[in-house]
Image 1 (cartoon, rainbow, N blue to C red):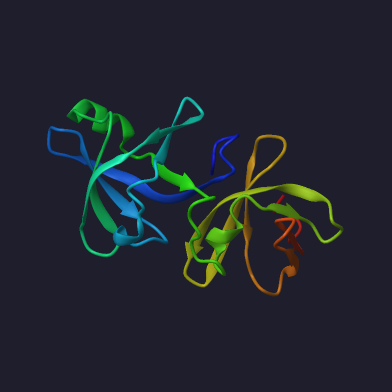
Image 2: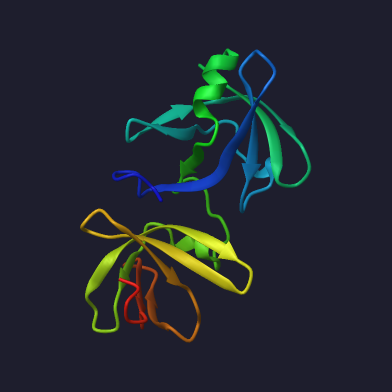
Length: 171
């Protein structure tokens, strides 16, 4: 789930572990290949509820879904350990990931069948055969809603609104 105020960011990775003593970290990538990461644009890691930009100093692919990365201002093992487990985001303005997939719905408003806003889609879980959306609710809670074509009523790409028949009890 994206922290409040970071709705314009896309999650592309998770910091899996530190590597060595000079601040290098191992990223687990999602919906992006290592070679598709723009090294000229910052990545963001959230600290105290605010996205902090970091620039990539070096990046080495480790297969199709992992990369060893060195970021500016992360120079020691202690710095690297502080970001382990944190998600890594990029600006949604500069990246377009899976234009037709669930990643493209992050930041959209979810409405129920009657058109009532239920919250903002903050992330997704790509469970095989059962993709689910994380919905940040106005009361601060998070709901997990299944994304299935039978439940989708309408999508408005211009207004960034997804209207769904939401099973009772999920919200």
